[in-house]
Length: 232
Image (cartoon, rainbow, N blue to C red; front, side, top):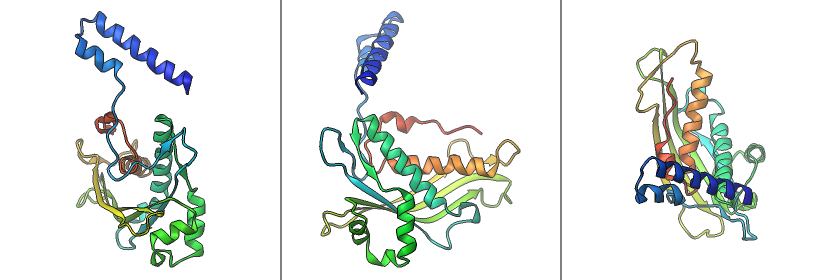
């Protein structure tokens, strides 16, 4: 961590020197030397400082409505959960924090062993899995193609219910929100071609969804909002 901090500081100083050489003013120099202030999580920042003994334990539960997902997205809920968990851990490490994610394999084992798990309530499921927080994602719909294009144009669309339950505060109502997106949004539909296979577009689309869902549960750099969508 110390080496990484020194590298970042050195990089900032070099950038500042380059900016000074190019004739930048003090305000511009301060931009290079001031660490980027993160934006607050849309729901709740779950990770804790590495100096603390406690490490928040998080479970990601997903459910897909039977009538809302095309065949192209079978098991996409598991992939979104895996990507979201990976992002949360990467964000935490980048901020020198920590968070523990229950492996999705164990989550799926629990769901298979308890077919009525949704009727148990998310807090009860969290207690059984010894978690502090439960992230519940209910996938209302996922689609891969532009409507009316006869599968000739890719255009990802997602509609999810997002819920966060604090297992240690059972009397509190869960935090909820509706998430939706169109991908890509700026470029418009992408023609189906030999160099853009359904599997490739599906992967990029799910990565996009998982990345934006990460902002609900972690503070994130402002630069995240300026991420440029891939050009196909």
